[in-house]
Image (tube, rainbow, N blue to C red; front, side):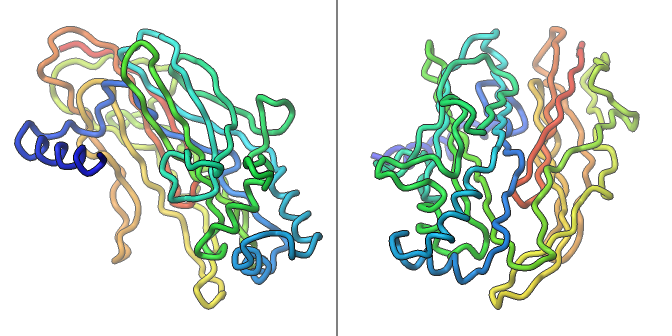
Length: 332
């Protein structure tokens, strides 16, 4: 069945109109998802302990003190956030489910007996904030949530990790969103990273936050709703954030420290027209840092005034993510 669907999609895309730009948000979309904090450190942490856990396939033969320490890490309070856009929904309620699984290869977190249902409900589009602090059944802890066989999720994720914890334990968390009166049904996966502190220089990741946005070279505060006119493209860029990119340490394959520095990337979205680039920033393999400037191009087929929303999603390349939203009024 999946092969048939894939072949149809390839055929249509090769013979029909080009696919729309990913920067244009015209239907139900999860723009971004994040955890606060974006990373949890296991400290102190001897890497041999994670290797023994992953290789053993179960926890029955492990040192009880190790298991207890991992479960303490699993009790770390977290906050999950999602930015959901529904430009045609007119404030309708959307149904959602949030679940987590132990296997990063489970693309929808629905493998039998290998996922945890965290919460569900209904809400209109916007920024959804879900505390996962264990204070109530509707706010479950992520790491110590139990799989159907009674195994804590964090321990099972370590057991199933092929890299034995070297690159961090990644727990997939899946947000499923449905519009009940239509066939709109989307999924968005976010990985929660649990990292072994191999060296004292390793520090827990801090969420990247853009200090602001510039419109035509001038500061664009959140409360300002500028009036834009015409079909000429409009330059936009983030306020300078180079001083906020963190230095960090990762282990090499030989378990020696490697020092790196973040190079943030920004994904750009708009509810009208397109952006000239979907993503800016980052550093290439040859060490060149990409420019963060971008341009908004209004839709020349639209002839009536519109309210426009812009989303700027920043990623630090280590699991950290956040966003800014700006609004404008546009007339042809």
